[in-house]
Length: 211
Image (cartoon, rainbow, N blue to C red; front, side):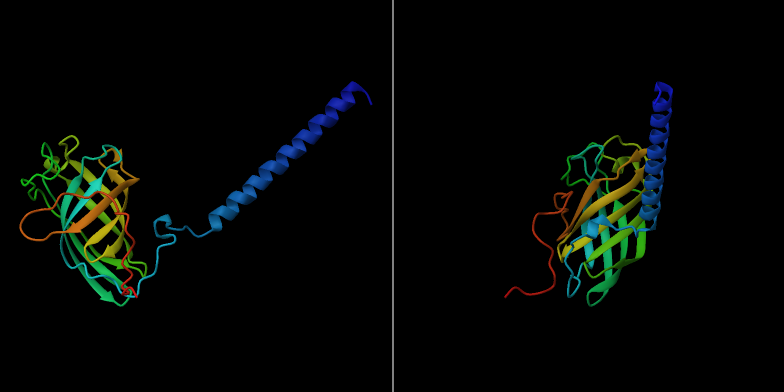
């Protein structure tokens, strides 16, 4: 076979291989689009027999990826209507002053309007996703003191009657805060506790007494 013939054969084989590769990639992408989307935050979460009672006031702290350790803090009032292992969660999320203050300052006070998320489903792994849309006042922004619009989702797990935590996705002003974490602890008495911005290491309370 002449050199010209060999070159033509190689070009043909290469073109066929490339076409097959593109076609295979296209079929894989079509298959991937047909698969149901899975919320990774609930993978392997244990099912509960009964949802813990979280009615009452809580201190919720968001630990932002853009400024770790500078917690955005909110006083939350939760009202959980439970039917066994599932329920519906109503919540009022009141921003607190944090700009220029120590994270555990006794001067953390309500500022601005509360963000409200009602009718949030809680599944049988005690997991929920609450969408919060509103305004973060400048004095509630510990990073810069700048007022920002808020559009975030709290993907949380009710771990016990005194602990709720999870992850955050969405935007605060121009910032993508996806990957941030949050923790919430019950408020007891008139003094706010120190903030906790992530899940503790202990397991979820499944509503079952230990043997």
